[in-house]
Length: 626
Ligand SMILES: Nc1ncnc2c1ncn2[C@@H]1O[C@H](COP(=O)(O)OP(=O)(O)OP(=O)(O)O)[C@@H](O)[C@H]1O
Image 1 (cartoon, rainbow, N blue to C red):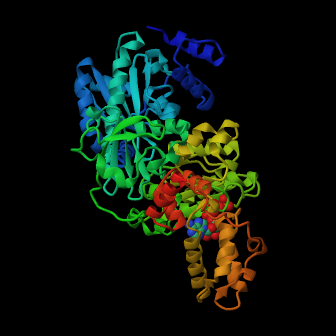
Image 2: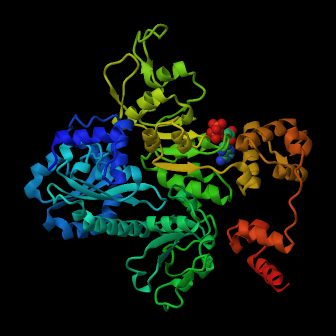
Image 3: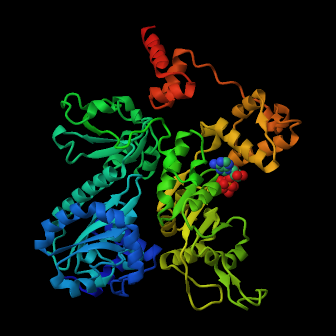
């Protein structure tokens, strides 16, 4: 076995760019430990077990997952316990929320961190299977001296991620041994077992959470369709994808040639974009049908087998899921599919304590959405909004962290409570987080990791608990690539990302306008309407300023309107100038192009054009004949 000293020397060599035979995931993790978390391989650190109160919170949040995964996890443990493996289920922050091991070795396991409550995040424990898996999202074996910290170099750990139905990493399943053969290949079977178990858990999770939508299981073989499909997804009454297993995300991303990181964009996409079917075809794939009837083809013609399960609760209409939403989130849109997907996701996240990152153009409604998520939770506490771009760099530290009496010249003599502390028990909304200076990013990261805040000039940290929502119109992943934003903070902030569509992409302009007019009318104590010409003018404007521009245009127009009707002359000049009208969709190529823009979904195109599906089918048949 390798000595601690030569292990530290090997890591130092890698840091200096020396070649190494270790696997790429191990080397990447070592470099993160050195460069991002500033860990020192010479400083061995004991395994960390979180305090009992914190563990209780982590377990409460993971309660449903623990329950759903129980049967699969026990099955896996049963297979490996005789080889002295222990099993750890950790949450997305690396805290072990479920654990199975042989109680005879309790003391040794606890000391090694293979125990309930141990925290295996990479920034705390260095390279380890759970931590590396959280960062990369891939299954991994971290074998003996692959570990960064010399205290863990006897362990062998194999972990695989568990993703939720929206594509976010939600947990990690790990099996570990205190002692193992030297050769890393001895763990390949462990990797296979863990990965197969996470696939079963993801499927169980998708099935347990779905009541209102169709479930479609997909496999290359009809024999495994009902027991172990490669992918599964949920589809709402309008034929849109509402959730996927990770296998589904991967397969669909491959079909569209997408990079694995943008899989979230698949939520809300019509099923007809991927397969030669629409929602009306789903009953054909129910159990009991012959294998021949259950063949489904991808858009590129690959035949697969599909099994469908009908919704438990029957629903009608495209926005059937909206009534289940908290009121605050329900009023954010009026029939736009992309917004409905955002609302669905937001309502699922609203009750959980995961940090949320909202991305979207300026004025697209990021703060509005953040407030709605906050209000969707009962006893939500205070909503503290901080615009990181608006506070001068010299003041932002004291504004956020507060200061103690006399901390610096000019400071108020009684000190000041910072905005982070003010959000204790509520929500902290960090707007334009991409503009936060790098030095403060490091401090913020510490607050988020440790749940404590130290005011400027203060010595004693104070505990704080808040839900964090951040927003930026910059793509934070690109700022990370440019070195302008810390990668570790980026990972902390975007446990879940919500991407708001721009106003020009939305299909519910009319509904939005009416909603805003009711609000303005209520403020002004009168009824305001748009006349037909003004509505046309609004529809043909490009809305570069998004909802803010629209809300302002309507307020101004309402002030200028003579009576209760807004006319085009009341609108801002830029809005009055109409764009060239859209060509009528009558010619064959126009209809074909429109259909392609709807991902080949006839129902969607019919909705857009305000005609029924049979009209579209008729026109398409006519085009084919001509
Ligand atoms: N869903 C919505 N329904 C009605 N009005 C909205 C909605 N979303 C935003 N607005 C209105 O649009 C304006 C801009 O919204 P908001 O401040 O949330 O945008 P933002 O994306 O945070 O902008 P910035 O990037 O400039 O911070 C506000 O006046 C708000 O009232």
